[in-house]
Image 1: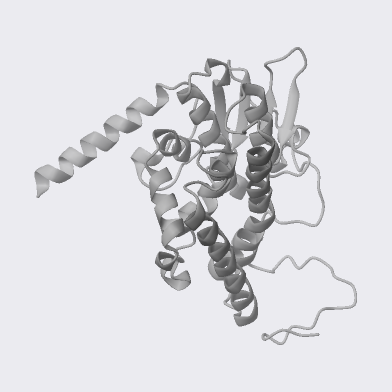
Image 2 (image 1 turned 30 degrees about the vertical axis):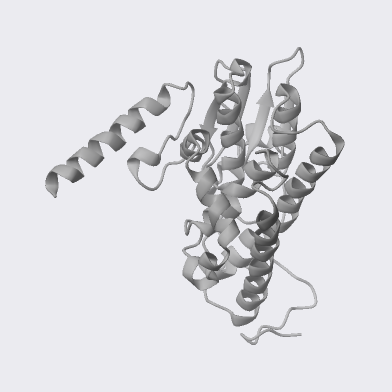
Amino acid sequence: MSDDTGYKPPQVWTQDEASGGRFSSINRPVAGPTHDKELPVGKHPFQLYSLATPNGVKVTVLFEELLALGHSGAEYDAWPVNILEGEQFGSGFVKVNPNSKIPALMDYSGNTPVRIFESGAILVHLAEKFGAFLPTDTATRAETLSWLFWQMGSAPFLGGGFGHFYAYAPEPMKYPIDRFTMEVKRQLDVLNRRLAESRYLAGDAYTLADIANWPWYGALALGRLYEAGEFLQVQAYEHVQRWAKELDVRPAIQRGRMVNRFWGEPHEQLPERHDASDFELRTMDKIQNTNSAGSMV
């Protein structure tokens, strides 16, 4: 068996240190910590260790939505984990998430500290704890969980599949790009057909289904993911576009996108979040930048 580069797999695979690619320095075929490093702990009941990638944004958006509803018990500290520097392999992080992926959460709100890893598990844990964004009636709950787990199963084809080979692989390869492009467009069509039927993914109410899917597919539809909007012709999915734009203006989503971000425009970055007031300085930066730009016209 060989691909369009002429590569023929060996009988027994061994790691090639020179395999290249953006993440080659941190990818490895074994688990466990690579160094000793304890995690910081702040003052709030929830300690989040994450990064503003789509999987991380799901959780910070939910926290901000819960706080916006008045659930003061959902206050949290958010600590950045720089995955390009291998911080996810520190001993403290591995204790919270043995899979060494962000996000990871410690819940200190009860008598016994609880660790939760995998973004979907964190969303369900918080939604059940605060009784929000996960409907209780059987049919709508089932619909919400179905779209939540659809995202958990589908996004790896978008991220590790399409995103990797389209944006991060050391050289373009036709077969994997064609294969994963076809799948991502099929996924967009799945969402588009559903959103033609209802305002939100689970029906008339905004739920975990939207919170989980928007950081991936909303960002993709808005041209923020992999710079692939034109390539995928995302504007053609009109109902996904409507949904993506409607959610994009929610204040909690705008705040959640900022948390644990240390790239992009300065006013969109909040590397650490420890209090709601942390957003105020970024808002002032945005106002000042807007005023400065206006004065130059």
